Amino acid sequence: MKPVTASQVAAMAGGRALGPGTALVGPDVVLDSRQASPGALFVAIDGERVDGHDFAAAAAGRGAAAALVAHPVDAPLEQILCDDVPDALSNLARHIATQAAARGVVCAALTGSSGKTTTKDMVAQILETVGPTVSARGSYNSKLGLPVTVTAIDDDTRFLVAEMGASKIGHIAWLCGIAQPSVAAVLNVGHAHIGEFGSQAAIAQAKGEIVEGLPSGGWAVLNADDPLVSAMASRTGAQVAWFCPSGQPPAGARCWVGARDVVLDIQDRASFSLVGTGLAGDFNQTVRLRTMGAHQVANACAAAALAICSGASPKQAADGLNLAVARSHWRMEPHQLGDGTLLLNDAYNANPDSVDMALQSLARLMAVRPGSRAVAVLADMLELGDAAPAAHEAIGEQAGAIGAHVVAVGQFAPQILAGARRAGGVGEALGIDDVADWLMHQTFDIVLIKGSRGIGMESVVARLIEARGEES
Image 1 (cartoon, rainbow, N blue to C red):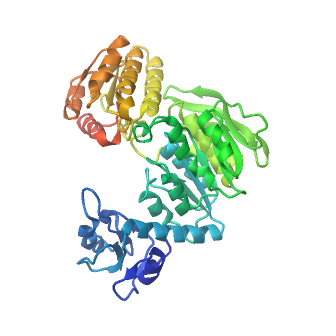
Image 2 (image 1 turned 180 degrees about the vertical axis):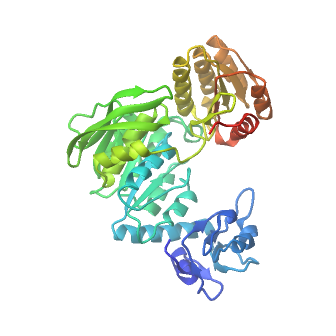
Image 3 (image 1 turned 90 degrees about the vertical axis):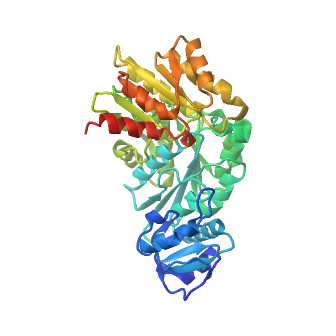
């Protein structure tokens, strides 16, 4: 956000300045007082655990110039009184996005059941080679996170990369009303949040909202290899571009991106030919990814297609992918511990699809390291509803089948272990506080840590790194 007065912020947000309204506010907009910077706008959210109003003074102490508040606070900064603080933040972001679109800023948005954040980071790193780009920090893809991302737009911005998540029908349509994308991608429709949606068909209905509001001159970027995604072509009036991880485009595709000749190295990183037909004709570019997992090929194809439809050339897309690194932590993040153990930190979140991909990576790493001993520490996958018991048995069976020792954590540990033993595997159930101690008394070559965000498996990773150190 370019610096403006508190009165101007109030007008954009639909609030009322309680003071003179002359303080210069910006460029940063923050939800956490610890992230406040000189001139920042602090958004006081009354959350489930803490009330942001209690931290307004702390934000002011770090230089914040103003705060969006639902009631007056005792803090030395300008206060903008709002009936509803989250709505005021959304109003502010919508105003900024509307102005940005009018001057030609391209908003590229994406959603999907898995891979959103990694793909968003890839798209951003491609478009940064083309022009100034704003993208979400981590998984800022919700009612609060996306508006904060939008407010980072300034007069120099050429591209906004927006990640959108949903737990209900209508969420993504609402987010699109704020960010106003002209290019949008759907990566996949899996099983994440199926307990809340009830079925994959309902998930597809929610994810497809991202292409419904695109302008006729915009681009809907769809996964040709996912039938639930490819069917969304009928739900948009925009032009359709395809990404095809299999390398085979749909018949008559005018714009498509795919991968051919995929090879995985000993660190499970993919090299391939990025091929397709872009807006300026056919292309064939070499890509060598720096991130782990065969599933990253699909993410890279989606990122390239989204970036090309946003204005990047195929060469810029390939060059950006070749340089792209993992910006968001705890997603198949490798750590070489001081004792030689390869620790795979995939603790950010978990659903049946992402666990399947993590276990496939683990199996490949075991295959290229004959005789290696591996342990899969698998914690609960949340928000699966009635499908949870069977889903946990399935991941346990998969882990047992590849020969990994299984450590199960959480409510569904019995189901995980039952699946592992059905496949001839071995393992035990442990509490989260006991996992690190158990691992430190064992000898393994590869350790995978995976679980839903609410379980907090990152604490296990932190204790292992602290105890065994990490090679530089």
